[in-house]
Amino acid sequence: GGSPSGFLSSCLHPAVTMARTLCIALALAPAAGFVQPSTSTAATALKADASGMDGIQAPVGYFDPMKLADKVNDQTLLWFRAAEIKHGRVAMA
Image (cartoon, rainbow, N blue to C red; front, side):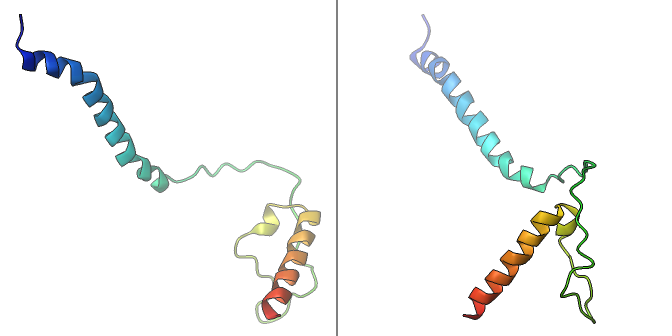
């Protein structure tokens, strides 16, 4: 025979391995937040021209820091504008 401690360690081995694997996976999971996203852009017809919309005034002019107009079509851009006006009115109420 073998010693009882050798038997006990061989019985716990899969559980210890699983616990170590789980700890490593949980420790490395937040590192995924530091990976740069892929920058592939698909060529689509969803480009809206917001540079000629009403409300563009000096000194700022055309202001789209998040480049939303490059990602949407004209209908969606008009919906964004209506939502912005609505939220502005609610905020002032």
